[in-house]
Length: 81
Image (cartoon, rainbow, N blue to C red; front, top):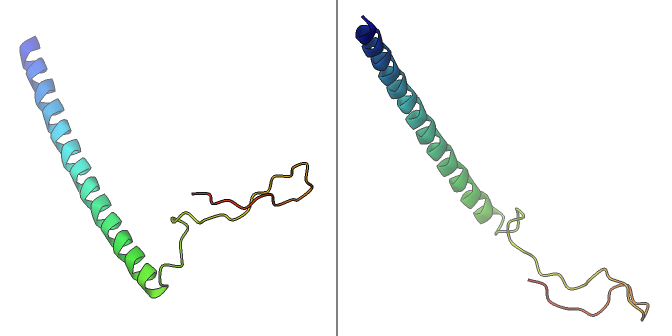
C-alpha cells in the first residue's frame, strides 16, 4: 500500500514540476519580448534625439572640486575617464 502512495506522490510531483517549467518558460519568453521592445524604443529615441538623451555614456569632467593650498577651488584641469 505504501508503494502505491509513493507512486502517486511521485506522479503529482512530476506533474507539478512540468507545470512550473512551462510557467517559467512563458515568463522567460515574455521577459525577452519586453527587453526587445525596450531596446528598439531606446534605439528610436536615441535616433530622434541624436543620442543626447539618457545617462549611459560617461561624460568627460574638466574640473575637480578639491581645494588645495593655492586657494583655487577648481584645481588643475584633468581628463577623467
